[in-house]
Length: 324
Image (tube, rainbow, N blue to C red; front, side, top):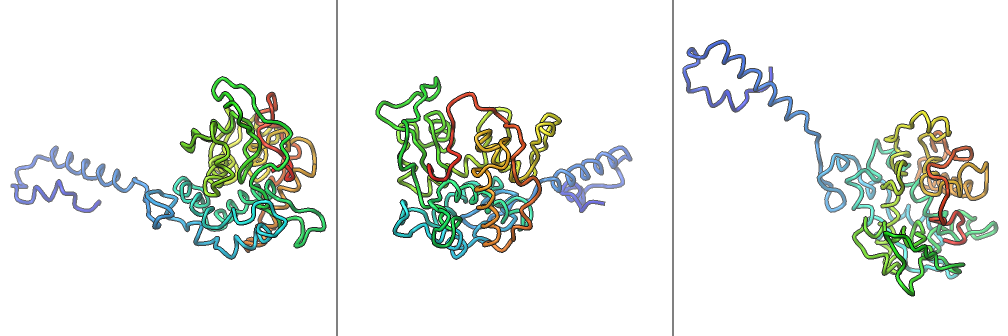
């Protein structure tokens, strides 16, 4: 029997004996329905400035399990004299950017282990795409993430006069940001999502670290092409593959995040260096965060996956760390 509903409280001064059995039944049904409706509402929580008014905020927030010293461990050489973005990237910029998306599940989905794995997965992509590491580099080739904030030697302007996002005269759309953005139509679409005019001012992604991280997390959380999920959804298990996906060997896991972000530039080509480099960063960060690479998860690579969207237009991002 549900707790006494206010409807019954208002009747306590009435002549209960005058109520017919039919009225009694209606009152009981109404009270039960009201109780069921109130108990069915999902619980939402607030965790200070970092996460507000969301069911995901009831979990730990990213700053609870990923702190300044861990960020410094992951990106230990980003401010080395030879790095190209000295003083640009920092922990506060990442957490400030992440706070926009934590109420939607970024780093707050599932239990603590999944939350930590998602942060490691996202930063694994970031690290591999902004690395200036090489085989004999101090600390090893995986210790040089966030070395770059822009493509250093663009080979072209990356302008394709699309109908929706025509190029701005005199503006180049080479790679910029934490997950480098290429091409005018990508700057336009991501700018719309962030409500920032990146089509006319793509340079904002190399001038503001928080915005650069926001653009990267937006790409992680948002399906950027038709008929494909987000990298977030395929990683945390919210995406359910169709029969066609299964036949194309596209399954939930880290491998599918590469498929979403890079398509056949990285996936479906066997065990190539571009793919293995991204996986290595992810596993290295798992180790440093205390999770351990043994918990990398199933379907780690995309060596045999068919692309969600086969290439039919200029590339949207570079698969190599050197051009990030």
